[in-house]
Image (cartoon, rainbow, N blue to C red):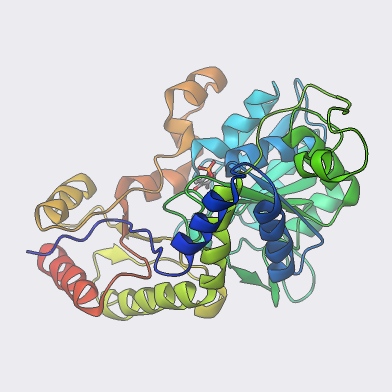
Length: 388
Ligand SMILES: *Cc1c(COP(=O)(O)O)cnc(C)c1O
C-alpha cells in the first residue's frame, strides 16, 4: 500500500551544505546569511525592504505594531484562516472583526471588504489572506479592488501571505501591493527555514520601526554592533521590543530553498493541473475556484469541498483516505467556531454563510514538489472509488 503524507519537506538542494557552512563559521544567530536572505527575497519580489523574522506570526505582530494598532482598535480579518492572523490583533489589545469569505476560493472579495468597512468605518486595518496561494482581488485591470476600497476608507492593508510565495497578481508578485506583507517559512509552507518568516514593505519608516522592534527595541542590528568602529557594548533601547530575529542557521536553509522556489512551484502546479483535470468530472465535489492563471498561483493548498449529498461525510472521507494511506488536512475550521473568538465576540455561525458551507465539506489533498505521478494517480483513483 502507498503511504502518502499530507505534506513533505523538499530539502534536496543546497540546504545541508549552507547549514554546514553556518555551523562551521561559529556564528549561529542573526548575521550575514539572514541579511543575504532579506536582500534576495526583496529583490525576487521587486519590493524595497524585507525583514527576516522567526515566524509569520511575529511578522504580523510587528506589522500591526508598526502601523500603530493599539487598545480598542478594530482590524478586519477573514474567518477562514489560521488563528495567527487574528491572535496578533489581540496581542495589541485591539479587536478582530471577522468577515465571511467567498465560497470556493475562501478569499475576501472587494464586495465583502466594502461591506465590512461600511459596517466598521472606524477600522484601522484589514488583513487580507491569500488563501491557499491564490491572490485576493487587490486590484483589477481598471485599478479597482480591495486596495482601492481600503485607501478610500483610509484603512491600512496588511497581507497575510503565509501561503503566497511565489504568487503573482496583475503582473507583479504578492509583496508589492499592501502596506506590509507577511510570509511564513514554517516547515509545511511553500518555502521553509524550519521556523521563520519575512516582513516585506516599500515604506521606509515602517521598515525602520519593524527592524528596531524585531530585536528588543535596540537601535541597531546585532551585526553592526560587531562591525562598526563604535564600542561593541554601546547601544540604546528606544522601546520594549521583541525577540523575533531569524538565526543564520535558518536563513541558510531559506537561501537554498529560494534557489528552487520556481521549480518547486512548477512541480506543485503540475499536481494542481492533474487534480483539476481528473477531479472535475466528480459531481459530488467542488474543486478550488480560480480567479487567476495556473502560473500565477503558488499552489500551497489544494482544498476540495465535498457536497452534502455525497455518500460519505467529510470526516468519514478523511478516515477512509487515511486507511488507504493518503494524508489530508482541513483548511480551516473557521475562527468564528473557535471557543475563544466565539465567546469573546458573541459570534454566530449563521452570520458566516459561505465559511459554514466550506467548513462542512472541505478537506485538502497532498500537493508538494516530491509528490510523484504514481502517487497522484493513486490519490485520484481512490477519490473516484470513494466518491463517485
Ligand atoms: C502558517 C500560517 C501563519 C503562521 O505562520 P508561522 O510562520 O507558523 O507563524 C499565519 N497565517 C496563515 C494563513 C498560515 O497558514
